[in-house]
Length: 191
Image 1 (cartoon, rainbow, N blue to C red):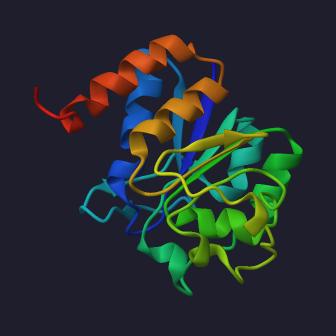
Image 2 (spheres, rainbow, N blue to C red; image 1 turned 90 degrees about the vertical axis):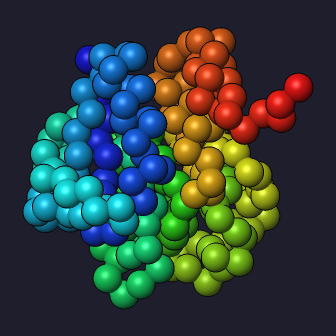
């Protein structure tokens, strides 16, 4: 069974990973595990309280196929968890890593996406972050980008983020096109 570990912080952006988590579990029967730094309860930006399945140091033992980081306001503060060792170990183990919104700050800080096409909320948000030196591979995109074991997305792209993560995990691109259209349908102009 495909296993996805979703890392959540206090004040995580509920909407950024909700569709991915629901589609993975409900439509595709994947095992979706929630993770926090120490395994303690976290509260989303919208007030949703989550008691995680795992602490960050327990993730590798679960052998996830993907490790996803939800965005949220904590990533741009001194309260942001240090993800460097965990992300580098997961990448070395060929685990798909996904980051949306400001969670891209933690991913960029590792230097792992320096040579990989990637996106985020804005290129200037990543400048000067940790070991980031990937400006040449930054793609200004309103949608998620999937490349070389990573999926990155701006916070405004939870639908394409869901799609690209699930495609990277081997799900049918055509079928996911249907779901993408279904969920994005409300944004179409009325005839």
